[in-house]
Image (cartoon, rainbow, N blue to C red):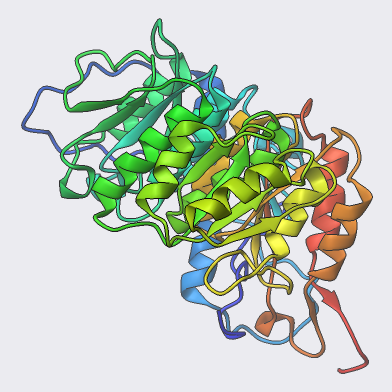
Length: 442
């Protein structure tokens, strides 16, 4: 990205009311559509606010900047609320009613569902607003709420050419948030998905009246991941450039794999401590020359398991930190040829989630493959930012000398409600992501 096209030049000031975009009626489909039901209020509010934020962010990327020089703290005029029917002005809304600052600040946007299922639905609608057929995905992935490893492995299907966002389901049916998001997304399948409109991972209910649902047989973490990797090869029509080997017994260490899989198309496989499971081994043997990157320290995936990979003939590298927070930072910084985020400077997007919520990591993965593409970072507290993460944000904090409109900007997606990551921590992240004046230039 050039300095002439900063990331968030057009993002409105935090205290400005944000209009909710009107819904556009969909043209009729040839086949019979599922009966629409009212969208639950909580999901509708989350999705609408997230869509608005994403529109502003992407507009900044596409439109660039070029406004007059000035102080970075100045805010543009607030949009004028539309008159209510009958010509009367609408009642004023407080910042709290608009969701500020808990929904968004100048440099952060929250996806604040009460659980991973709601967060996945909101993320899917943010990436695919679905107000027109062109904004709808060709397919979606339905993963089990009880299978975090399968959900992380399935994140690879968000990569091009399939581009299928993740939703959660159960064996008994579709949660309300998933059902309503699926109705809005209305996937129809196309050549890139092999004609499938949905990929059901394991024992999950198919949408009511749905056709063209492709099931992926699931088992333990390694079995499910191997099956998804095989499906990925058929859909993509090419072998992967790399494999990411994650620990099935340490979800915090495995969580950052979801974001990279969605961004890169590199499949996630699983190891179990000292053991390389048979499905993982079989997958590697099919692709003996594909490099393998081990995510996590030896306490999560042992050196013995790494040696087993090397015996197959694959080149092996380890990316790790001593705990889940440090591990995610190490992965965000890592670069080896075409593998790794290599985010060591300003001007990037980030996704922040709790270290104990691997389902949220999978739910948020589409945000790492769209908008302000960026790595997943983890916090181990609801109220305070871990010191290593604060130091990392300081290292990549953006700055300018003379013209803030020509600077690079950071943006952070915050995943989860106030119980997961509260407003005080979000405010601290906002401060660390804020553009700062450096040097003595005028």
